[in-house]
Length: 310
Image 1 (cartoon, rainbow, N blue to C red):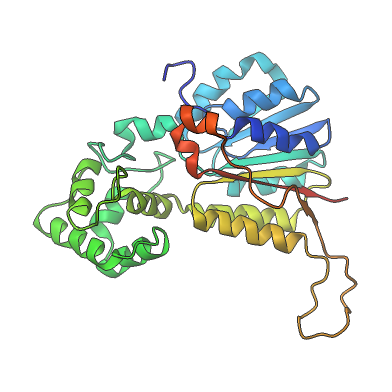
Image 2 (cartoon, rainbow, N blue to C red; image 1 turned 135 degrees about the vertical axis):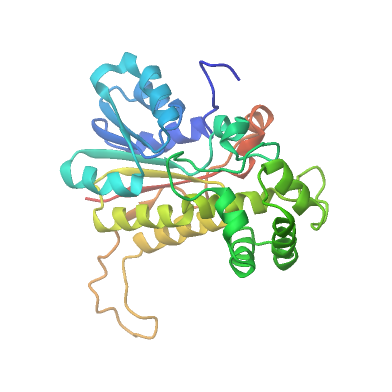
């Protein structure tokens, strides 16, 4: 992975196909700009749009601003959480044509050991925004055993969540846990082997979800779109976790439901006109064999697309 291409954008062809259904002109919002791979492809393919890219990582903003500079005024970067910035963008603009969010962690964030995301990291950080208050070190060394059990059970859906939480508490009782490598070894000793996959994989992801309030961010994004549905716009959301996908799937189902009468009502009295739009496809779009070969991290990615009505 070189300096010019630090991250392979996941499901790129599927994303471009998803947004073929959006209006040909208007403002596109990439809620998770990252290193600009999706945004660059979208700006190239859809000549009639201008794009606003949002990210809370200053390193990503700096890289993408440079990468997308050739597009001139068609591109604008905004630093912050999309849950904070998107509501204002939707209120200010009536020409939103597309919205994309990729809820994964970039390859660069995972591979840079100093960011503290990986099993080999010499630190414990996992903050997408390096200036955020809560880090993985705070969670691992400061949360009670009951709080760790909650995270491991709810976010990792780990059967051995009690054993894992107890192992962390016992280890930090001897000395603080300072690195991803150390945490991986502690968890690896009490969790069953799972083929070639590190047994701590889901628990690391659970800690990252807690540190960055990732499920809360997704819920706030969905709430914003429900409160301010952009007319005729297409929304594409990429998830990497069953809990994330469930949130998106259930909300898309609600948005496409026209009758909201209680099930026990014999006859519709609500007007049968409450659908906000319709999903583009019944099933999520996933990586094909070629992408899986070149980018194994795409194996758990799911893209769901929705088009709002008038």
